[in-house]
Length: 170
Image (cartoon, rainbow, N blue to C red; front, side):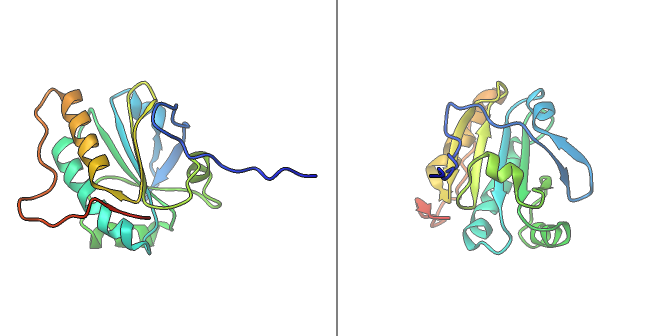
């Protein structure tokens, strides 16, 4: 009898699988190199996913507040370069978009079953926050952790009067 292999999603406290991917411009981006500078927010998505379309603009807000030389943000696309570029333009994403290769080796190494899935990876390589689908509290935890890392007060992620659900499944 053959045992069927099931993937396990990477969880908080586990070590993030290392990877190197190309961005939409063809530049190679290495998780190990980025972690040498500071935390990494890695978000896996597909352009056709409505919850991805809802979630990524909130990650852009986080990027505009905390992104820079010491904190990396990556949108890891399961689509081709041209479609990914169009998606980023349509949703106002300015942080780097990387391309998971055919058969999604990086998505598979993280045990993904749904998108969006996003992770805050601490400089030691451990997963600090993990979320599948949209999670308001997970995004707030990322904001709090990055503010603490940068030695600044957390900036509110959600605007006054903005109606944002607690969660949306991916």
